[in-house]
Length: 178
Image 1 (tube, one colour):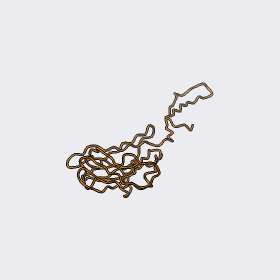
Image 2 (cartoon, one colour; image 1 turned 90 degrees about the vertical axis):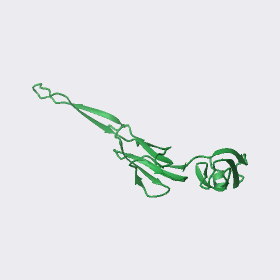
Image 3 (cartoon, helix red, strand yellow; image 1 turned 45 degrees about the vertical axis):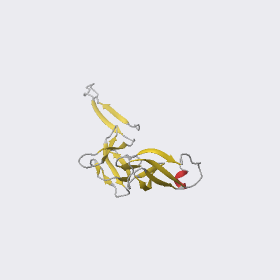
């Protein structure tokens, strides 16, 4: 038996006189499928702006542990919500292992902590692919010196001009990504 599932094995014995013992049942799992982990930002409480939580599921053997690394730091066992009390850009790498030892592929997600500004304009609003680096002028409300942007899932620092404008320098290496 090699398929991932819960399997049941039933057995009994009989002697030459025809006596048959009651059937015995043995249930076992074969788990070859790694768990699935999801990371989510939630509203913070008690002075925290936001909280990062992970949830992992595994349909057969169960989740043994979830691990994460924040901003390239050391790998840490997840034991509960991760609280953020200041505005800023971060990146988290995470994965889980199930009780059978199956490890899911690590995932890396960038995210930003803090209130999000409202964007009302982008200039230029159209850039020809392959044209190289450029500066994006972002206008709106709620920008702070800690404002960062995401371009093709990559955190890009901004140059703060005012609460209504920031500049994002988009390097050619990010501009051409799909």
